[in-house]
Amino acid sequence: MSEAQIRVLFIDDEARILRALKALFRDCEVHATTDPAEAIRLASAHDIDVVVCDQRMPKMQGIEVLREIKLAHPRAMRVLLTGYADLNAVLGSVNEGEVFRYVSKPWDNAELRGIVQLAARIARDTPLVLDKPVDERDREQARKQVGILVIEDNAETQQRMREILTPHYQVRFVTSPERALQVLEQHETGVIISETAGQHGDFTALIKTLKQYHPHIATVVVTDRANAQVAIDLINEGQVFRLLLKPVRMGSCRLSVDAAVGRYWQLKQNPQAARRYFVAPSADSSIPSWLAGSLLQRIKLLPSRLLGMARAH
Amino acid sequence: MLEIVLLVVCVLLAGAAVVMYTRGKRADQRVAELNAELEKMQHTQSQVIHTTKLASLGQMIAGVAHEMNTPIGFVKSNVEVVRELMNEHRALLAKCIQGFDMMLAADLTQPQFIEPLRRTMTKVRHALATDARLPDADELLKDSVDGLQQIASLVRNLKGFARVDSDGMDLLDLNECVESALTIAAHQLRDRIDVDKQLGALPKIHGIASQINQVLLNLITNAGQAMGDGGKLTLTSKRNGDMVEVEVADTGAGIPDAVLPKIFDPFFTTKPVGEGTGLGLSIVHKIVQGHGGSIKVRTAAGKGSAFTISFPVDHALLKKPA
Image (cartoon, rainbow over all chains, first blue to last red; front, side, top):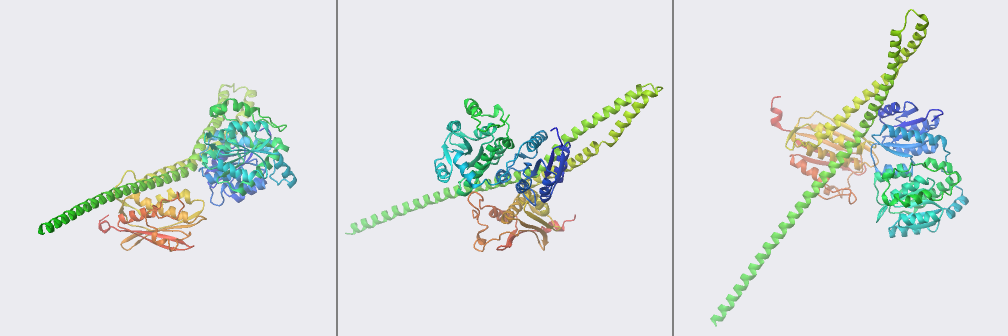
């Protein structure tokens, strides 16, 4: 970054971790504390660019700290640094903390530096979309206009989603990646709701790739194949917007989908802000063969309906 | 007439014999069936106990792995950073050496060379003398030695906990067992629960370390689970006459009266299906009994429970000169 130094805030209950991170980020303006309440104050007081927070702390869990910082100082990008992949923490970091990356301890120095630098650049250059409630008329319009695509091949869940969603939204249901692309090519789609896998295979590679090339689409993953590592990958490689566990509940499902529609609607008016949900395209070697060929081409060629949308590479 | 009577009697007797024979045979068959069933049940039970052992092994590994992630995290980072700091410092040194070389090669009779050289050298010397990299590196290395010691003690604890090197009876210090089990359970307690240790001086007891550790881990884990919203875990050890005792007390939910008589029964559990085998406390009970000890429980609904395990002191051991 050319201008002033990156301002980064580290929160961990272990002072030796903080000293290590201070030394690692010695070319940045570093603030560090073991006290979560102090952290929330520091974030706004020093106009922090990036917050890196431990998950397991005695006074307050990391996701709570990040949720508070998100409210007090939304401009900062949030990274969770944790020694233990605990599914609830991962879900919380998505649904409440809306973290940019989830990093496991022991971390890789070069990787962590890269993440913080990228996050800081985005925090500085990218306008913020505030999660302020859209007014009711706007919301109605968004519901009418924004297409929702559900990728789910379990008939029972599909039926349940139909009951919950069709009265309120423009919903289309598909059971395979192939059909999903057809819908995406034909209809403006702002929200994708998907399982992590179907009977015939994995959906996560599709979810991630779509996000990598079309970061304005909000993804809601609804799964009964809960697994912390899959969830972490969905954050780091797919910037998933919400992660819900089955059985699908009417309340949380409607809330999440409404929030996702709102997010898409705001990004549509403010396309530059989509960079806040940036994920780099996966290496070719990690893309499964069924996706690597023509499907990948079709994903890349999907009409970017949002003008001025920065392509993710 | 008599023949007929005799014949009837004979037929009756034969019939009775046949009936008796088949009955006996059926009984034999039933016994064999029961034996087979018993064998099957014993097999299943030993399988379940084995699974429980594996589950507690998994819990142990997860616990220690988590405890190690923190020190490994900063030690690994520090070592890399110290290397970078050394390289940066070395670059500064190289400049200084370059200056020395120039000074040695310079014509000292020519003051117009000396003055700029002196100015440069003074600057380099100052930079070298005030370079914060060395004290920074020193601090990072101090933390790293600390962290490595922490990792070493975790590994020692783990070895002590599992005692794979010894399956037989040993002389045990119960306080050491408490510390071991606490380390293993630490990651389950740390965020929510205050641990208060009141460990008194204890004579050693005869026992199998891995089993006693398992007992303590089970009791500590249960206590932790009883305090879902946080609380205080008190571990007290003391000598009580001919016995040594360890009490594991929580400030959790307590055990309802209706449940209390069943807590040591195998397969009894109040946890949802898939979360508990119902074997934890039955194994605890079995191990404590196997060591000639006993287990007591005090509980009050809403206030907490306290499990006390006590083991006999070995008198021969006490009389033996040190």
